[in-house]
Length: 555
Image 1 (cartoon, rainbow, N blue to C red):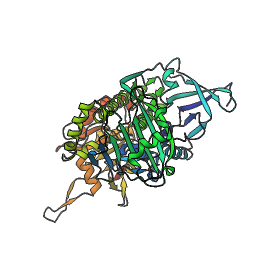
Image 2 (image 1 turned 120 degrees about the vertical axis):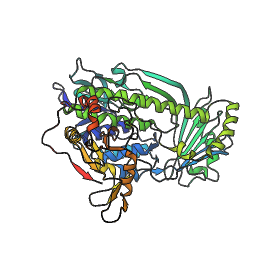
Image 3 (image 1 turned 90 degrees about the vertical axis):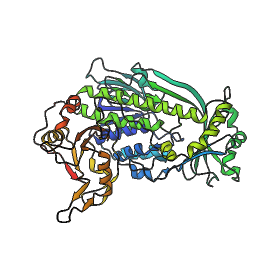
Image 4 (image 1 turned 60 degrees about the vertical axis):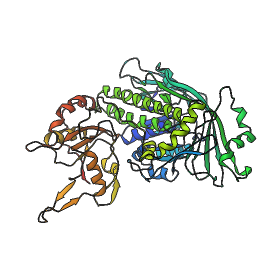
């Protein structure tokens, strides 16, 4: 690097945790080079995050690492709520191997293994450079819009300070974010912090405990237990007021804490990998962007772990921002498109954090009276029809109405929600995950021939069109015999309801829908008013692209 002529990069990603690595990989998929700057040369060796849901597993699919991840993860069976004596109050089981996004709804893993997988993936991306052993010491937002961001860093090997210029900077640098401070953003508390002790243990012998998540609903010593891998286990214990972590980390005291889950296991088989005191916070940054400096992941939000969405939220940030940033940096969209990042993700993250706080309070809060009431109510709740599906279903809420998620139309998929991903027949008839047909950009699912307005729209957005056919086909000469569509296709058609076409964003969020045409009309004629609201954001010119046909496939 020449210190007299600063290196220039399109995007600098600060931090090589899951959020930063995901951001770089997705930018590369959209054709934008990225430089990842990280202080550590290797993945942080100790376990931290241990769970991601099927929606985030689908984002791993978008990076092409879902099969490799599948080899290092194990699905969680469900959850049990127990009282302080470890009597089962309620049990919620998952009855489906796959969720609506095509993967198990709860996936347990070891974060160092995931980070190694994501780093290995970047070595296959010629547009991404991962530079370890450098500490970013300053980020200076541009003096005016359109100017590059100045990043000052120090080589930890030589101690030499250097400077680079970036068209955009993604602050994926964690809870103590330097990038957050550089843009004057502050964290807002959504609930009081709690002190917890996290314990990770490796044991070659399987523990004689139910193979799912255990939540101890005891306000005096709330605790969580989960099996993370074949020989990896995690406990989380809430510290009492005034209690110090070192009071619990003596090996004898620690073994006593985990003893209810380890009867009959020789002590020398229990290898403590880590004990760490964590402050579980519920916070959201008040400002996520200054020009082209952005906050993602823990730099933008922190959540208690009760619904397992800490790391998931950061990966969702990356999925939401990268396609928008790529579109702006390549000149296909205008700068105001970037305003939708905070508008969409901040409200979404705040809602998930509040859900986690509420779930934690329901399961572990209150005093003796609350605990007695909880012990009486939970068994009855677990016996209600559909209770397991409700409790264990994906908790990610839809995006609220905005420029890229318009109002809902009766009978249509709701804009701001994710399209499901069933297996659908490919060109050769072999079942394939839907996203393999949709590609990396915009996509249009349709059961109808496209009218001129939709043709113009798909050309403008360079959208891939997937024709689903119709839910039922009349076969001539059979007296009206009905033939159902292929299972995955019929599931999508059912999801579409009365819509004739559904337009999907690159992050698989529903952008808009078109009604099935009435006699004398074409599919898409009713989209004109809705298009006017978001076309100026998505397209640097609202005029359709000339000449280039959209790609098309049938399912």
